[in-house]
Image: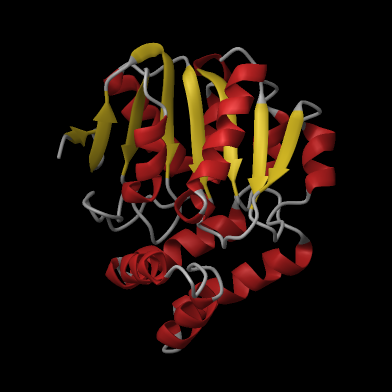
Length: 257
């Protein structure tokens, strides 16, 4: 269990050896942890691979604040700094994709490519309103009902009970204050500014529901390519890893990354 002290928070990470020039950094979503990328860590042999727990998640330190997307991006930058991962591809799931996009916008010279998995980066208005309402509910006595109801829709299909149980267990182990703060940061994220600042290779993979407005995204990032997985829920990197790995493999190949 390697541990990084970034200055403001202690973060736990997993690392697999490989070529630093072809590195991959994985950033999980809210109420989750680095284990959601275990199949990707196994798959991309030959590349240096790192996945870490965001602050307040998994085995990383729980802090009183710092859950804004801009700050999570700074944590990601600190991880990359300390591990010497400054010219690789970043893969982010859900909220982790927002943090990855902000990091890429802040440090475009240090990110050679970006893959976003079901990330709410430029949310359609109806979905954005729903996230804002959920964030309010997470600060209320209705927390359990609201969060369990919401996550029940995205925690994995009923025919993959092991994954569904893992996802829901991760949600239950995440402190309520962290959940609420992450939902608030999702609702408040300025995805347009971040997208406009990043003009390198970019792929967005949806599990079916589109948590981003692709038209707006492509207007800001003409280089954007999209893909869609099938037969899974929101955690498609866990449920259908062969599909996600194939999408990323093709993205790396086409862009010579």
